[in-house]
Amino acid sequence: MPTIVVEVMPKPELLDPAGKAVAGALHRLGHDRVRDVRIGKRFELTVDTVDEELLASIETVAADILSNDVIETVLSVEVLDESPAGETH
Amino acid sequence: MPTIVVEVMPKPELLDPAGKAVAGALHRLGHDRVRDVRIGKRFELTVDTVDEELLASIETVAADILSNDVIETVLSVEVLDESPAGETH
Image 1 (cartoon, each protein chain N blue to C red):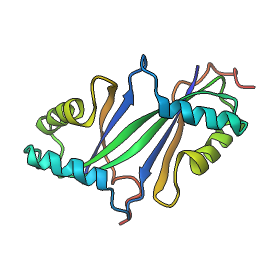
Image 2: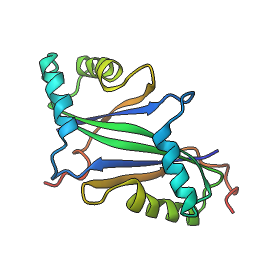
Image 3: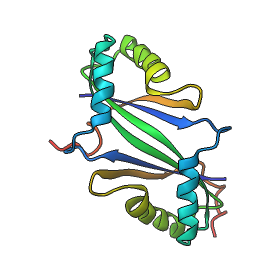
Image 4: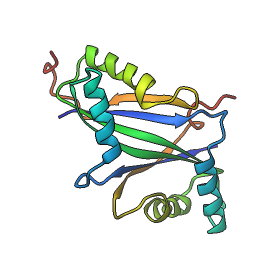
């Protein structure tokens, strides 16, 4: 079945405390070439079939339900023409 | 500066309770063409420059620090904004 991938990231102008914590941990472990870390979300929505109407509704879902538009940006809504990640058949 | 994107998803054989909750909410709202939802993470690591050594260390970081290999799979480690050709050192 097709999968629609929705990527959501914290807005660039906002602090991302979890990302900062990971960046700090990496520095303490010697990974000092990493300057910054930001942590967002990746949603995989499995759907029966893809058409324009479905994609439009998923764009609305991404903006209204999957993300919090005060603090997050929807980076992309894309059809993945594959099984969900790592799915075995 | 280049960005390295690391994508991490819950393992397919494990239940993803947050994803199931979102799928349930979508169904209650009438989005019944969405069969399943799984929620993973998307890390953006900003780095000065990209080279083979850095990429190898980020692959290790992705497997050992950014993901929990009991419950998660590293889907991809990709350079998003590569430095101009020849800039690596």
